[in-house]
Length: 144
Image 1 (cartoon, rainbow, N blue to C red):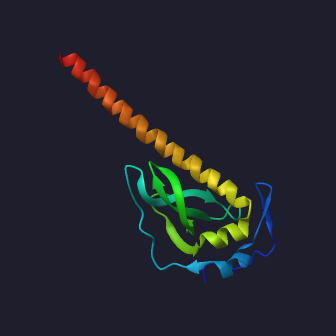
Image 2: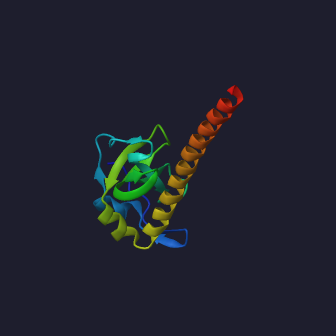
Image 3: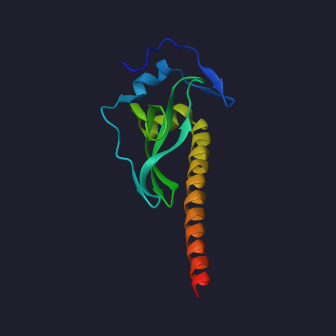
């Protein structure tokens, strides 16, 4: 079993009451392998956003999203992971329905965090692209 269930009482995080790990266990499914994570130029599937259930715990939720230009479009599910990019360890999976049913309006905070995380990628990708194109244009003007 992934979660030992010793923590029983709900906690307060971001002002929203969260379910304990024990209450989450029936809604989680064990995963045997990582889902495919592939994005090309911001288009594909990947992990976005984060939601930590217990402050200080090494495990947290990451959403599995279809993205277009690094912006999240359709959530496919949620994974309980530990570690960080690129060394995620996948522990369990929760469906979109169960995530929204469990966190209700708290899931909106998660969606906002996923959007902000993807905006960072969006700005970095297009900023780099404009810098490269601008640099090439500048070099071309020097060679004339």
